[in-house]
Amino acid sequence: MFESFGFESLTAPQAAVWFALIVGVAFGALAQITRFCLRRAVVGDDRKQAAGVWLTALAVAVLGTQAAVYAGLIDFADHRFMAADLPVLAIVAGGLLFGIGMVLTRGCVSRLTVLTGAGNLRALTVLIVFAVTAHATLKGVLAPVRTSLGSVTLPLESAALPGNPLLWAALIAGLALLFAVRSGNRASTLVFAALIGLLVPLAWVGTGFLLYDDFDPIAMESLSFTSPAADTIFYAVASTAVSPGFGTGLVGGVVLGALAAALLSGGFAWQSFSTPRETGRYFAGAVLMGVGGVLAGGCTVGAGLSGVPTLSIAALLAIAAIVAGGLIADRVLRGLPARQTGPAALHPAE
Image (tube, rainbow, N blue to C red; front, side):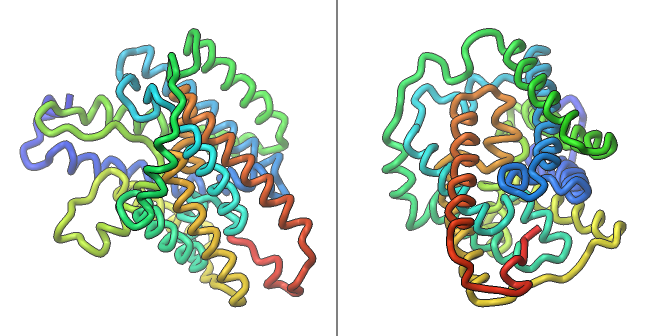
């Protein structure tokens, strides 16, 4: 499809970076406005409203993605989400680790990327540690952990939910929207959330159809933050040796979009750590999310918002494990005696 556009100085991989930058700016601005975050939806004080936002985005993402599949624009048959052998141990362990980590850092990776654009230096620090850890798990000293756990697989007759995908899409979206309309959110907030969800099929179609080029192929991708964060940190320190990709453009766009929204709304503010204890907690959470995100095959956005719309069993298992990890961590933390008092003890990432 891409060759039909007639570009002479822009290749498909280069176009993908610009496309991701645009998608990222939109996501960053919308996520800043809606405070989009799965951690808030699972254990936040305003979890009902936060869940309404997240589920609205998911509903639109599911319907849009499956509509694109039905129209023949994209196909997930060869995507990693549809691997016949399910790395069940890696996904469950990774999801639990990621869920615990996002509670320790008080924000999932997508939310922390948005907060970085709004001036939160705690979030920026977590992102750097997360990205380095994720890269080490993908290609570095922690790779043996990934390969060992990934070798424990469960063969599946079908890597996607069995039956009619349109019926599954309607069921998931219907239940999500039913909760969303009862979540107490303003209509405008849910509209913005729906726009976030629309970015998922837009990215799938953009990379899998519009930018498809037989002579210079790119991977079909949508919103995600684990591998893109690792790619971005690697590009930042070795840009003369590697080229940016879709993920690099996405992360950069999210930061820019969040920055613009924060400046326009007066929400930009420099924030940093208050105590060494708080710093250690955030560092630990960043490491757990870095390892967990790779093992699970994605974060709350990569495996959740973008993965669930593919109807992949692997993605559904990953997001379920992430939620379980978050609930377990929250229960444990609430049961611990308070060792710190004052504002710093309640200092949130969000």
